[in-house]
Image (cartoon, rainbow over all chains, first blue to last red; front, side, top):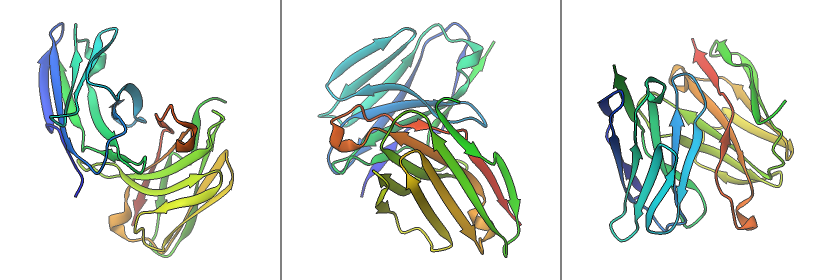
Length: 109
Length: 116
C-alpha cells in the first residue's frame, strides 16, 4: 500500500528553527509537495521537490532524498503566524497526490 | 473573483435531505478534484475530472454524485447522507497531468458539512 508518515504535532518557539519530517512509500514518484493549512482555511502550496537536494524559498526550505523516501520542511525565524498544519503529499506514478495526515505546528512566544 | 471558490461555506443537513456543493475555479486549469478532510486523517481524494471527464472515482458511496459541466465548474450532489459523512469538503484544481506540469493543486476554502 501507499503510505506517508509525518509527526502528528510539534511545538517550537518564536524565532527558532523547526524541521518537519516526512517519509513515504508510494507506487512511483513524480514529486513531493508541502502545503500549509491554517485552521479553518484551505491548504496553500509551499514547495515542490522532484530532484534530490535542498530548495530554499525565503524562510522555508524543503529537502528531498528519493533513495531514502524522505523529505523535510525547514522553517527558520519562526513567527506566530507559522502556527498551522503542514501537509506532505507525494505525486505517484498515476499523477495522483497521496497525502499525509499533516503535522500541527504550535509556536509559543 | 480569483482562485478557487466554494459555496456554501457551511452546511447542516438532515439524513433525508438533498443538497449540492459548488466549486468554481478562475485559474484556467483543466483538472478539478473533490477531497474529503476529516480530523487528524489524510485528505481523501473522492473524484477527479480532467477536461470535464471523470477519471477517478475512489470507491466513493453513491450518495455522493459529482457533476462537471465545464472545466471551470464542479458540483457535488449529496443525498441520504450519514452522520459519518460530516467533514470538510475541499475542491481543488490544477493543470492536467498530460501538460507535463506544474502539478500543484490550488484549493478552495472548503464546505464544512454537518449531517444530523
